[in-house]
Image (cartoon, rainbow, N blue to C red; front, side, top):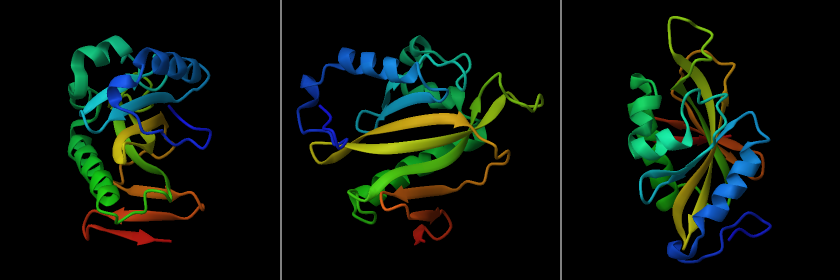
Length: 183
């Protein structure tokens, strides 16, 4: 259950009625041009993917159910798969070890090339996609990443990970130094 402030009330995962969540996600995603994707970090699977075909051209809820977590290997550009794994690990480690204050983080942002028929570059089947990932906790553990994917105006992968705080500040992560630079 989500409170008005957006916090997930602690409850066992078996009591969550996923059908009700899917109805809410479907309703919300039907009004957005962005694709809505919910990752389950604990179970390493996609909990939900919208039927919005604008950004994730050709990737539907049914295909996601069939592919499971392998969805990423099929939809993300091969050169971005390792970057996605680095992002996943960095977010988990930074929040779980207290390097980033979980109660201050609003969302993370990064770019991924996603397979799409919307690509403006006919040499590639991939569209540069801007990803906003909002972390959600269950029973005091990072459990979900609620993501919005949209077409990016940036055309080159810069392998940058940013965290945006509730106070409107942000930090960039350096994959070379393995440290956050706060602004």
